[in-house]
Image (tube, rainbow, N blue to C red; front, side):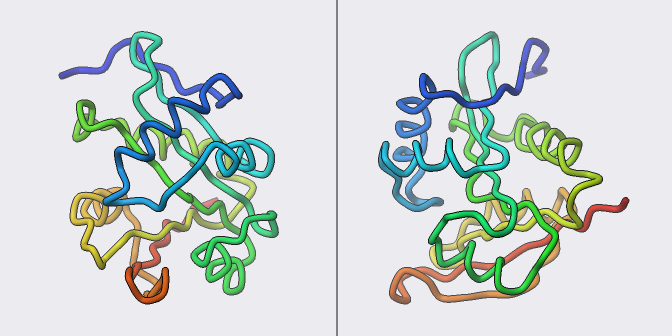
Length: 167
């Protein structure tokens, strides 16, 4: 399928239900969210955008710069080790639109937004349970593994990944 009529737009309060619904359908790959947490992201995120095809939302990406009010184990791990980054807390595309390049469109937009502002894009991907689709996507885009950590009381393990931005 060739994506022709798409746009990537800033998230607003009217997108909260969509974000919650898509996130909760993706709990095998991401952590739980509620409306309060999503609303907090609207306030503290540096990049919170919705992917639209034919004006229908099909995905979202949330990114944060260093020093934000966000108490995620993964964000704290990265924030304690790096100074110049945009951290991708989550990027989710609905299952009907995966493997069509939308994730790359999102990362291209993120990269264009922060190219001269930060040195890298950082994220984490679950390796316990193993998220093969996300690991493969990030490696293909150019991310390198930079560390690992057990999270959520050792029920999960994540691999931290970095994409270095050339300036």
